[in-house]
Image (cartoon, rainbow, N blue to C red; front, side):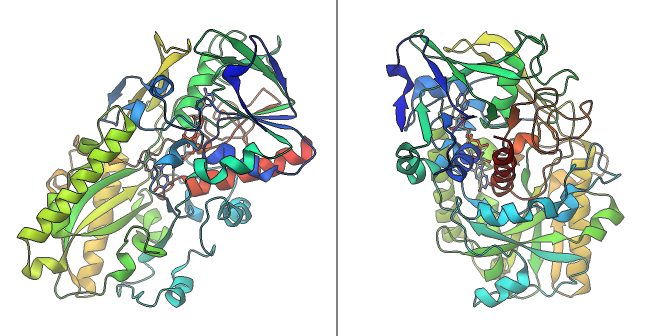
Amino acid sequence: MHTDTRTLPDNTLIEGDLCIIGAGAAGISMALDWLGRPEKVVLLEGGGFEYEEAIQDSYDGPGSGQKYYPLKASRLHYFGGTTGHWAGMCSPFDAIDFRARPWVPHSGWPIDKSALDPYYKKAHSPLQLGPYPYDFDFWRQELPNAKALPLDPGVVSNKMWQYSEARFGPLYRDTLANAHNIALYTHAKVVELVANETVTQLKEVRLQMLDGKTHRVRARQFVLACGAIQNARLLLASNQQAAAGLGNAHDLVGRYFQEHLEIASAECWFFKPQPMSLYTYTWRKTRASAELALAEQIQERHQILNGTVSFTPLPIGKYRTPKMQSYQDKDPRKAWQNMNDQWQKTLKKAAEVENGPVQWAYQLNTRIEQAPNPESRVTLESERDAFGLPRAKLHWALTALDKRSIRTLYEILGQQLGIQGLGRIRLNDWLRDEKDTGFPDSTNAGWHHMGTTRMHEDPKKGVVDANCKVHGLHNLYVAGSACYPTSGAPNPTLTLVALSLRLSEYLKKGC
Ligand SMILES: Cc1cc2nc3c(=O)[nH]c(=O)nc-3n(C[C@H](O)[C@H](O)[C@H](O)COP(=O)(O)OP(=O)(O)OC[C@H]3O[C@@H](n4cnc5c(N)ncnc54)[C@H](O)[C@@H]3O)c2cc1C
């Protein structure tokens, strides 16, 4: 059943068993998992089925620290969430990403990879991905031209990726709107989470309409699935019963904001042409491709973060405009279009001017986790949006470990290419000075928001527990990448859908 919340009489009370707030990748994956069950699921989506400027404006907010995308353009505020224009790159985290690594402060999940494995496989269904295995040996059989670079697998491995074309909005709208046990409410903007007097459970959530009407939703269990910035914003803004915000007794909500650094880092000059189809991705044509990654024992030996390296033909890489530059319009549709236009111009220019041996040369692009940093954080502004919700501010802060890890990655890769007689690596200028810990303004990020309600068994060290339940509130959960203590190298959505499906199963046992 679908209801446009704007049509309800003022002060309507909506009731259900499970209330999911936010219909993006996390919220929709969970709701689909409850189809046909006896419980009534209330799915609240702040936007409608299409982009609306008046709603999207709620995401606007200032930034500081390392240059970032406009907050307003970095997420989509309507049914389907940011899958409305994501790139669909998917790969699971590695086992090391879940471990406490002494050289990575604040690392360590309270669960290990085996706890997520069954849900990774299940997550392939809503994401419409191919077979679950991600090891190169499997894909070697599947991809006719897959030939790996002859590197020592004990040092450098092939990290496999698959590509989802799932846009959750158009894909799942009818299924959810027609489901007998799902009550989907669009234009249901949640502005407050209201706890009981002892602040031990959530009593209801408050919805605000732009015309001034308000409504309430009551349920036995609530799941916050609005994305890492908005989840933190809502918890912090819900300060009627707890002055610092809900779940924030230890000043952790909003802290440890993490992104993936995606940055052109070096040039690779092969001595002769190499078969590179395994490392090449063509939109809508490639089923799977690989990036290079360092083996776990090498990361440990060099005390660095987990990251991968992708190849862009050098003529293209040289003329490419950094995404951090081309994606700066506050309107996400224009930002995306501008980035795409710049890409087309780059392809044209590269085709016109370059030829010869440079075709055996590549720009090496790093994709790397960001070390958890409590100073990298989401806070609230005094200014409010049209719904009366304080705006979010992002201070994005990187650390020396982030920079050293990237540099070391290329030192090791350069040595390996040399040992195998394959070619040479030349570091980009911004990486040359070992003492310089800064990052240029052209440093790209993946639009991956993570870590603002980190998972830890100890309430003094995390906002949610191993089941994604907010510490201290027995019926409030968080679904999504906000729960990540560390961010792994791969893009986050496959993992956040897997984590949401794990949460879903947990709730089914208790609901
Ligand atoms: C340009 C771009 C490219 C990307 N490419 C990739 C990629 O290749 N691979 C990858 O893994 N990830 C990628 N991402 C990131 C990916 O889009 C996100 O990880 C994913 O969409 C997050 O899912 P989510 O459900 O947590 O949040 P969202 O998709 O943002 O969904 C949150 C939902 O909550 C709703 N909501 C928010 N606030 C409220 C409120 N107060 N009340 C009610 N509802 C609310 C929103 O309208 C939205 O529907 C990309 C992102 C961008 C911007």
